[in-house]
Image (cartoon, rainbow, N blue to C red; front, side, top):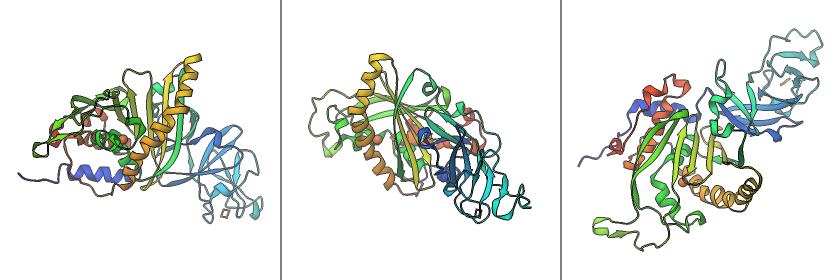
Length: 368
Ligand code: FES
Ligand code: FE2
């Protein structure tokens, strides 16, 4: 049997590698709305350092580097409404356009006014977060980058926002990876303690509306015999089979996990800070009012948050942090999901290809 290492075509790897620092041309959630008040807040997204500043109720975003000598503008202050002053020599920038309105220490007739400019970013506030568009040209409507289900005014959202080490692409691969769920999470977490885990399964990936690709389980085995090695799991489990989950991904790095048969879904955003870190936004959502809404809130704060978002997902984060930047890797059949995600990335706005042309249906054949 010939062993091969080139299940991923070189040109595919190149595009995927180009995306290591993040996909340009999308709206990204970068901070909680209520964390941007009187002071500027420094954030980083796609390797771009940005100062978020609230003025007259609206959040503005400027590149966090003064064009004069490079000092972070996030350390500055507001001298006049609608503007922001650099802390070093008092250059004053228009918050909307980034154009230099005054150089206070050079007098009102400073000739540099109107000639210098700091980059300003389009911003919006939705779902309680500040979103920044990182890309060139006119941004698409922000609604294009927020799944419709989450924009439903009846949706309750409970979340957790943390900074994590590792590459955002591998965090997405992990989110869509079928294989590890059945092994990594089998051991050491409460979320998995009360249910029987499959030993193996076969899957395929399909396209769905809204730019999603979805993992579907075609067959599943809870125990099996592995040739000379014998049966696995070695101890037969009398636990009930766990709930089933329908996992989907869409650009620019959003995971949707629908808990089948339950009225809840959890989402994750993996927002690239740079190559080696990402902002991890985890959201649980359901549609409920009154008592049901309170019950969901209580379930989140007493169980789901700790047992799923903190402990269970910690196992994922630890693995993502360990993944080296060394593609191509030797893949196996369940990695059909990873291949589909990588192909989806090739259809990102920055590569200018229509999704329909590129992402077709994948079966496990691709990795056999
Ligand atoms: Fe900003 Fe001089 S460095 S005004
Ligand atoms: Fe996982």
